[in-house]
Image 1 (cartoon, rainbow, N blue to C red):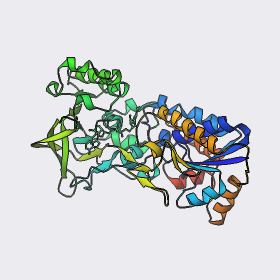
Image 2 (image 1 turned 90 degrees about the vertical axis):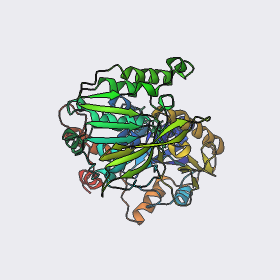
Image 3 (image 1 turned 45 degrees about the horizontal axis):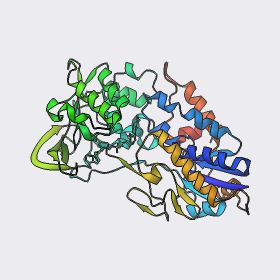
Image 4 (image 1 turned 135 degrees about the vertical axis):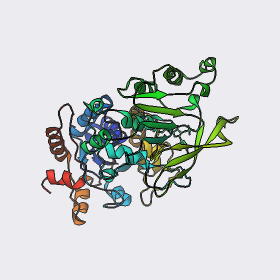
Length: 432
Ligand code: NAP
């Protein structure tokens, strides 16, 4: 019997578990670890609460978790409770699927002023991530700015713009829903350091902005190249740019405005003890398509600034790490040690991108660790003994179902669940 352990229970972890199960059948056991007693990582804590259809993929992960060869082991933090070296002793291969939970920094003066938050923090706040439950983003001013032109920037802007009514059917946590309901924010400036042809926003997500109840997107037609220039764009991007162009025709007669400010590179954040404005430099594209400052600067008022400029993975002691992810070659970090998903390739692609990624790494493992072989590693029994010896009490999949049932039973009308947002509350449900 082979024993594999996957560290991280988000999409990359579950697709890899699924692939390993298919490759080895009943000749292997796969343990999926998570530092929390609740699985699914990005699906629970990252995907926007008003995008329930995307979250439905967790049903597929449920099936994997329920299959006889796979176990979910929660409440275990690798690097703190147990080391990678210890896991390598216990398992035939260790696969790091820890995602990319940290915000990249802008690296500009004033970035640490109160009122500047990273998208991981803001998204974590409205999605019930225990580390960010107390974020309390400043929503009492009229102006906010979101830095970045990717889908996460869109998520943040849309969540700030929606009415309470528009969150019906979502699983946004109660504390965020109430705070957003009382928000004074009326103008959300979305800052892109390059232009409309360089956005990283996908059509479905962008299109939503044109249909909000109380908010309207605003674009400046002069920011766009002539329409013929859209022709050579890749079809998805062309569609996004067409949607953006169409925003110019929308009536501005709604109380909230989401203003696309292109060719605007943040230079510094200013304010007296808290953010009041962000100073940006007008840019143009250089020969390589990068943003080049023109020297013209101006200020964008904002009492809340959300940076949505990409994420990085958490380093783990003794695992080579560079550029925000684990150093790896096609997923292989070292002998019997692998990375998948954002921990492998950085924060790009959709949830589905993690499927081929996980399958590819599983194939490599199957080639390197044949099913028939020595098989003298202990796997889960050794892990549990080791955890017990240092006072860590892991949770299992049944514990998660107990938490889930309680969350569903607490849901407000029309919402699929009301998430617990604190580690201690999860453990309390389990009688710990
Ligand atoms: P992203 O797509 O890489 O976008 C990052 C944005 O930040 C880019 O517009 C980038 O501009 C900008 N940026 C980077 N450094 C900057 C700086 N120093 N100053 C100003 N702007 C800067 O990342 P993301 O939005 O975090 O999304 C991560 C992944 O998750 C993406 O693959 C995304 O599609 C996916 N996602 C999907 C969905 C969905 O499908 N609904 C929702 C959320 C996220 P440049 O291009 O100029 O570098």
